[in-house]
Image (cartoon, rainbow, N blue to C red; front, side, top):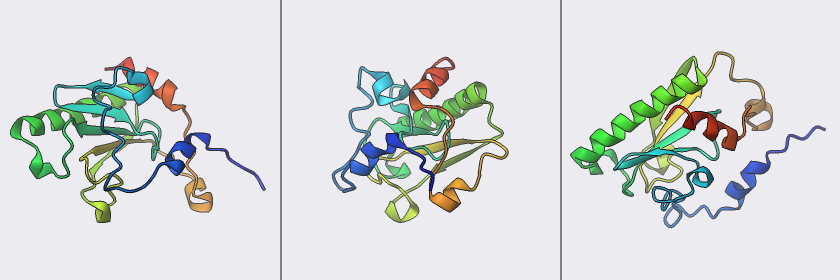
Length: 159
């Protein structure tokens, strides 16, 4: 048997999973150590971070600064800022990584797949032709070609 070590997942595995009290996004907006928090950039009302547990290399999350659960809770100003930030994050991914396409989505509520339903966030997942393989099917393992810290440094050059 062969082993693929995914050591970066142990903090996630060990994190309590009570969605009522757990929000890893709180505090990120004002964290002075942007590299540690993987904060790519911030606007007055939103911020963009690298997903610590990505579906694919370059997986970003766009969040409003304020902890809200649904799009309808955004003020008009927050809504404009949030969606402009999504577009800017998409542009950065295209310039920095040259993906062939991109999945962009918002999961509202636990039933819809939101892992942290109390804080609205949008996923941007770059995709490349042939980026899927047998690993997720056979071993429930994703193979990511670049370390998060290196990816953060690469993307920051395009902010």
